[in-house]
Length: 147
Image (tube, rainbow, N blue to C red):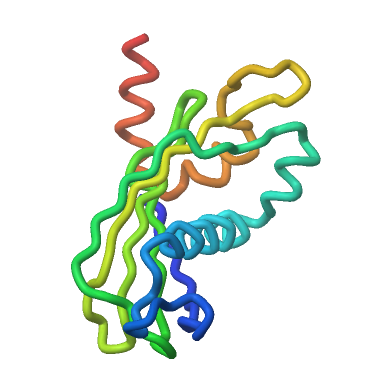
């Protein structure tokens, strides 16, 4: 499993009248987490785009448990629970406040997309190569031998 963490402070303009992080802004926090996770793997979304790969969101599921509040320092934990092998990738996001209290979780499904061909494509080999060390490669090798 691949896990990355990044911190974001809740800004006043991101809150509602109660001082809670506005519900629609959680998706932005997930995006920051995804971008930083990819950066921790050694490259950026921009570099993927320069390689001809876009990653549009295909699905977003969110569950709210407790509010993030104005000026809270939020830890966004981004997890890849499975090594993607096809055209889609699922990022699991968890948000925690400074006290470590679990606030929110979401799952964002993106697809690898070639904008020139206008079709889904498999995960770029460079990304696969960077992710594989985080997963149990013994399981991967045994499944490869079965094919």
